[in-house]
Length: 239
Image 1 (cartoon, helix red, strand yellow):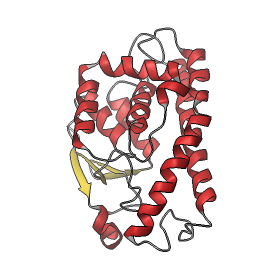
Image 2: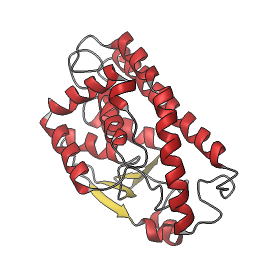
Image 3: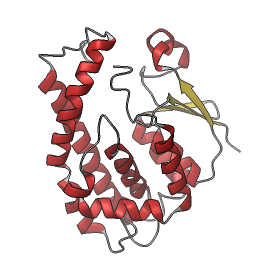
């Protein structure tokens, strides 16, 4: 049995989907929670190839980059690798979701750059006081919702191309991209990065709810996370 260790912060972010995939695959792993309050001082001690999280260590081998880790976990859980065409269809939606998120992140930083200048090449504020982090979080909250509502109609467009069963994105069984919809739902309810998911992407939202409500393990995971009160990102905390 492989020894697996996941290192990430104590919020959903880029680590939540990985944890859910391990849960679905009944894969044991050590959940190493990295404290955001000591991150800058201690990050060199975590053995990070690119000074960023998440990082997965499998039998002493270090893996970085979120998508690489997610695809590893999905393959271990049996949600990838069965059919090349199915995987390609799923990647169409996965890449669309990723594109929208990247465009919004870049757009937000650019939109708020004058008022909230950051350290070069990072998301960290030059004035990194808690007061300034709170001010930017409030500005981000308003703008993120607006931009997400404008751009996420693309999800329904791609889903209509690949879906044949209302309970899944592709085919008649759970795949990797279904778990991305669970992540979309969780993020849509977050205080800082929430948006009107059910209104602007109704087909994707309904599919996400079917995936969650008809799979006990996923439902339990979502319920536990939402009950924890933990945020989806480090906005206003780490940066």
